[in-house]
Length: 438
View 1 (cartoon, rainbow, N blue to C red):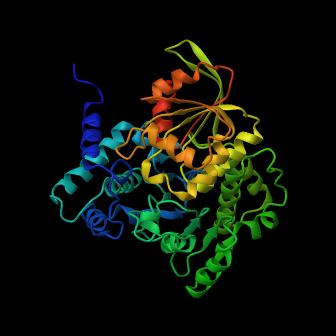
View 2 (view 1 turned 60 degrees about the horizontal axis):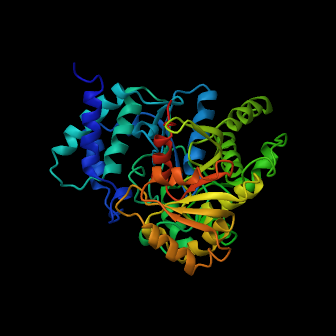
View 3 (view 1 turned 120 degrees about the horizontal axis):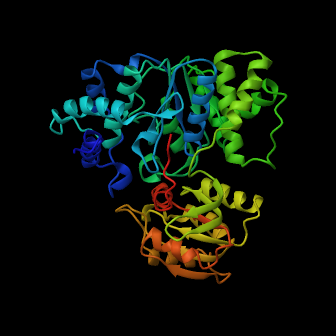
């Protein structure tokens, strides 16, 4: 009897043949949008069938997108949400009214998109992300979404998602990441991220590094873009909000406040509706982002991790936020399982990795499932040179994520922190049987 998901699995195989920036040692040329533009044209321009909120930034894009998507559903709209990367299932990237797109609906749209894309025979160029973006647009059109929240994949100006009109733009916190593609300074990276904006279309700006706010204000004023800074309007628009930095992670709070400001700028609702938004947004969490779990069972060993923290942090700001989260939740000392891409190991990570590692009595280095992975030996050398091992932690090298988890069981009561790559986090979830489901 044929497997009920045979068509879906075959389409996944075809998609993976395309490869992607995330799993390739070579960054794609982000300046080429001819492929996605032609593909959407040949699909009948699905992207024009719904209203769009477009989100760019370095950290917090996915959570902000998920929060805004949830609030649009609360507002009564059929809502699609497109994010990346996924942890265990590609359908995590395409969400319809809070649920992953079904395998059948995904397969229908993927089949049509791939059929057209294969016909181009490589000209114009199409990336894996281009194809997935087109699939998402086709799904949203086919399922009659009224609003769609789009998260950029890389940058903004020349990202595959930046080929649409939009009702609102959102900038989450901008930091140093993907410098080899986006630029070496915050302002250079911000210039790429702000490329999603359009004259006359409002932009909501999350809290930023001090040097960026005046630069952003001047740029948006010059380009005639209405700008709303979250920290300037949130307390005025949501005076009854009771959340504090003591009870919530700062990155989560930034996303929470930015999402609510975005909704208020769009809909200018009463205090009663805003309270409903507040309660709905409080419930939004994302797997693999400051993801603190207790009594996590590993069926293979019939054992529980008393405390497990999963975070895909791999840049300066995200790693510092993780260190702060560990301290706030009293997870020191911990066992740290670290796996990262080799191209992330630049000077900007030395200080945050040193701060993170000093919270660990046990360090376990492991590769991530990517050709770009740093070996355990490279990780240890980088951390040694950064002064992150001066407190003499116990160090182990594990050739796989599963063996790293097994090594952490030596101290079963000690908190275990898995960090450095969404690929590593996704693999750990699969190993533990905690795949993302919706």
